Every structure is written in C-alpha cells, then in structure tokens.
Length: 171
Image (tube, rainbow, N blue to C red; front, side, top):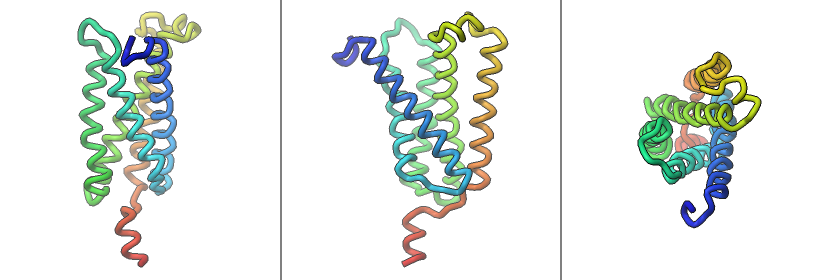
C-alpha cells in the first residue's frame, strides 16, 4: 500500500500524471516556439511535473536508485523554473531561465518514459533488455534532440511580455 492505495492503483495514478505532464509540456514548448504564452497549460505542465516528481519518491525502494537521483535533480530545476515563471514573471533573464529549466524538467520526464517503456513494453524490452543496446540509446538520443530543439526554439522565439505588463500597455 502506498498512501492508502494498492501499489497498482498508485502506479496508475503516477503514470497518468506523468503522461499529462509530458503531453502538456510538449504543447507548452510548441506554443512558446510560436510565441504563445498558454498560461493554463503552463500551470498544468508545471503542476503535473512537480506532482509526478514528488509521487515518484513514495514508491517503495531499499536504496538510492537512478530514479531517486533524477527526481532530486528534477525538483532542483523546478525550484528555479516555478519562481522564474510566477514570482519573476519571466522578466529579463528569467524568461530564458524558465525556458531552460522547464525544458530540463520535461526532458527528465521523457527520459523516464523511455526507460519505463523499455522495461515494461514487451516489444521494446525485447529490443533492449539491459537498456545498453542501440535501440535504447537511439530512443534516448531522439528524445534529447526533440526536447533540446524545442527548448532552443522557445528560447529564441518566446518574447511575449508577461500578462500584467501587456494589460498595462494596452489599458
């Protein structure tokens, strides 16, 4: 039991949160690449990314695992991304700080998705049973390139002013 749920139920909830974080994060980065704020989806992305990271710590474990280390790193980048977005309102250098740190958080989530997919999906597991085989490395490289490209495009193109400044100028 984890937080009053069976491990299977807890895992399902964790996976759903993770998939929502990844999907919303990809949409947010595509939006930023087109210079769109997407405030509601951004809040969903950051909230579910924090939730998936935190819920990962509640799984039973006997020692420090690569997943625990990645979770700690994810929380570190999120402690920069969230204030950059909401406390600093993307002003000045905080805009790129937010884009880079949230891009790293998205990449961490997608990295774990690939790891878990190669562990749990039989056809992928057959291709890379130890995750040291080329198909696993290629999948991780593709994920890294996709997220890096989206992050670079967002850093280059996302120039929209924070909502409060935009309203003040328009009003």
